[in-house]
Amino acid sequence: MARSPDHLKQDGLDIQHTLQHLEEHNALILRAAGEGIFGLDLEGRHTFVNPAAGTMLGYDPDTLVGQPSHSLWHHTKADGSMYPKEECPIYRAYKDGQVHSGDTEVFWRKDGTSFPAQYTSTPIRDEQGTLIGAVVVFQDITYRRQCEKVINEFRRHTDMILQAAGEGIFGLDLEGNHTFVNPAATQLLGYEPGELLGKPSHVTWHHTKADGSRYPAEECPIYRAYKDGKVHNGDDEVFWRKDGTSFPAQYTSRPIWDDQGALAGAVVTFQDITEKKEMAARLLEEAKLAEVTRVLGDIGHDIK
Image (cartoon, rainbow, N blue to C red):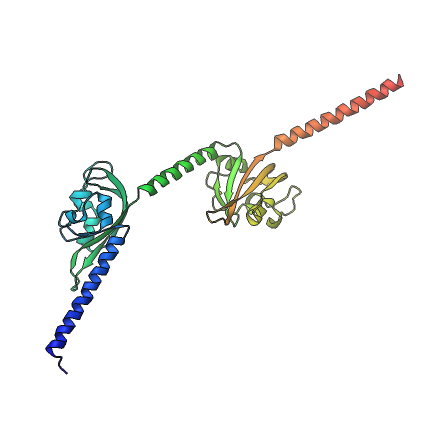
């Protein structure tokens, strides 16, 4: 049955109302979003700019609409050299129709300052599938970069300590595999740098007791540290070198925890105490000899 003109008119009004509602809803989303969002046409001009984008770039959002994007806030690289538009991933999105992302570049504010940005440029198409531009979502990652700098500096400092330490130091995961090994540890155990990474610890250098009997991992204090979460020490066992020889070792195995407080593994520090053992043995012999000498002296004195 054909619809009356009044019904058709009402249908049109309903469609307009729905479209208006969708536009208002989308506008609310754009205004509320914490990330910068803007649209670009095929010439790279702004078609819409949300408040967050305007704030981060230092512009009134309305003043950016219709203005070219690349020459306003993406014209120069972080090192100060010119950034040709043709090299720009954001530009390429509305030229090749592919999604492009980046987090190693800077965006430039109206006042001439810049900030590191993470962005995604997504191509948009019309109902016929024709490429008509792109939508760019970005955020200022200055704080992240500052945190990364602090973390990297901390890691560099920690690495310097590990490299310079005279004691062997290595990390173990929950399976007992090496996660890091410092130079002293590799030298004491007779391995090349990097050779132990990812390899199981117990079967590599703690598999056998000093008397030659097998050493079950379950009995090993080092193993227990990353199982029961307690610190374990030892100085009456041996570690085994790559060449099959062994040495008496003094060690401490300390559990480590992740950010959520879950047990993540252990850090083991150790040293070869061969000289210490030999020194203790010599001192003991000297003490025994001194005692024998004293006793003999006393006997001789009594005889006289």
